[in-house]
Image 1 (tube, rainbow, N blue to C red):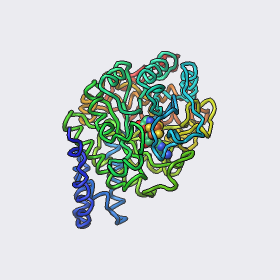
Image 2: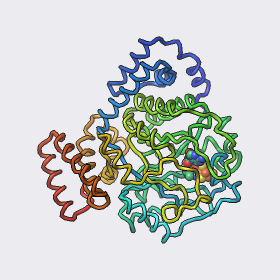
Image 3: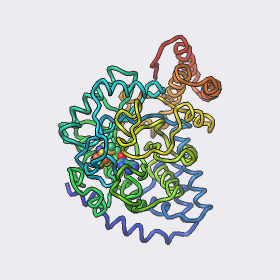
Image 4: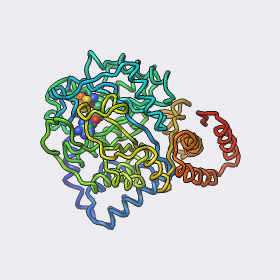
Length: 457
Ligand code: SAM
Ligand code: SF4
């Protein structure tokens, strides 16, 4: 495979040079076109990335909110990461886990400890986990990951495990598929080859092409639910957003399934980082623009926002087009039991706990969702996209969000939040148009009150 054809840097650089020639009304035409929810091409996205005018920017944000609501309704999916190991043989300059960080307290959780962490996350009310680890072929190989996933499913009430890990061979991806993961996630970090080389000087991760083609191998192994992204701050964000969209377009064209999610991590301080400053600083305003451009360009792709961002910015981004957020995250193995500063991958910023965060989500009029139904009902990959594109997905997602919020309120919420949550549930039931579905939801809510759990549609 000629990977230079997938990400053609020359094409991206040309786009970045030429787009500013468009006038206001031409730019607004592109924004208006996006309201059809058919997405935008890379050329059009490049024009939006260059918007400076406040009025047009406002229009971009309003359109992003509109599309988010049309496709996903007011739902925000909630999850937390679980780090199983910080052992790593790579040397990514930005990361606390890099091999050159001799002072890091290295730790790999055993099965008992993995269960403890999963249970600590579960106690907060989570049902979805993102499993994460460093890359060390002797410690965190595929068997480590598969065993961890299996252990959690068997011993905790965690209903969906997504995995963010190093790239693998097809054979290894098959094992991941067989254990029943949700989404497989991998970030290219930066699509700019020269920067990639500088940031990843040694270790297997220095192979740009092996990383770029990870999703192709995952797909070959039967994983059709995948997530991509870059680490913002390493290189020019405009270049990397366009490259991400080109990668998404390539995958969509080749396999008929675009990325299930795009993440938007931004560089954070890390213990003994090899970088003394952020190479390409980007502002909060830039991140808002990035979310909106992704939302318009790939409307059916979920956008994931982590606790790397501040509480204030997260609250703003919630209504702008983000569809999934992590809550209460710890970035060290064992961090939910004991948060060791010198074992962390990077500093988080939004430290609010689950109750506080769910309160904010509800108060803003969003519907927190702990739903994990889709992949358990085989609504993944193409099947999911087809439903999402027909906007039929609301039929399942909204009821499931209601049912899982009810469980959360009963099991985990404070008294104040219970009251707010119940009001929200009432409002959401009223919104269900199909009378039969309304009855089904009401009957299941009753069953949840009577002690049944994990009811989904
Ligand atoms: N070790 C595997 C890998 O690198 O692919 C698994 C994922 S790594 C533990 C998770 C992600 O954390 C990386 O892909 C990177 O984008 C992000 N990350 C690393 N250092 C970071 C930092 N200082 N600030 C923010 N995100 C960081
Ligand atoms: Fe290791 Fe991943 Fe950190 Fe790189 S980003 S040092 S591969 S854990």
